[in-house]
Length: 406
Image (cartoon, rainbow, N blue to C red):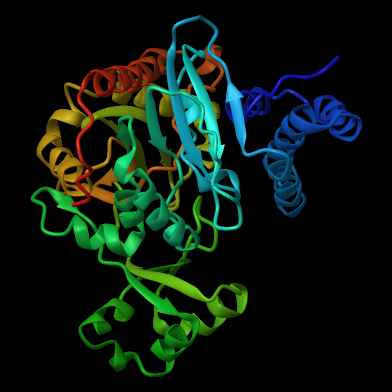
């Protein structure tokens, strides 16, 4: 039996729910070896996703490249006829390289086509018919040239385009800190990009930092460029710790930023994930931890009824409370960054300001959590997914205008 193309959302949901993906991976491997053309490529791409999920990234990337030699276009058909036809440009690389748009189309009530583009791939000649184009390529140093090229490609695109590539390209952490500076009610720590050599000099000659010198005289954060989920992120108390940090991290370029203590009076840190869809905010999740570096999976949310109760209150009363408190700041973020779909990882300072950690188009929002434990998440997440579909419907009915890249 030929297996269909499953895609990332389906496979990640299975893994999130504790399903053993080994039998499926074996069946996909057999199909990739015994089939040719489309069936082999679909199997290899799905197997690549499973290997990424399992942490076998090098093998996953190699298998992905093999799949893309067979074809660059992958189709996830809607479950019903007459659905909106959404085409998304995505690129090769790890799962975090692209907007996980598959999660946004909900229960397959949108016909989704993924078109892989990359500097080392020919641009496809036959683009499938579609109603809306979504720019799914995420920001990274390696994607900058591709995003510039795609900006040229879509100048005369005959269909509406969401998330213009030149705006996605501005989502690097240092760019975001500059673009969102001076917004009332918003705290965005300044971010400095340093090469490995420059960072080493900060330790030996901190006064060379000029106006940034106070940064290394107080707790500060370091992380390699193009990393997420806390990879390589550390808090340093003084510049003397930099050599040890560099000994642990082999990367060539780093971001440095001041550490902002966002602990509440109870000593817990609270981090929120907010999606801005067509300019309106939607709650995705909230995590609580006694450690400043929070990720939802390490926050112990599933093990604490008290934490889940607080998250439930946050999500259930989001529009009346959090979104209302930060309405002006969230509106300003949408205006400054100009993206149709954007995810914010953020917190609140002790004085009640909105503290931005990251603004990204590639972060995932989902409804994968077990309903018996996180049942309160279903309705808020369906609101977000409905908002994304409403965005597609709105731009479909609007006239296509010349691109404004400002």
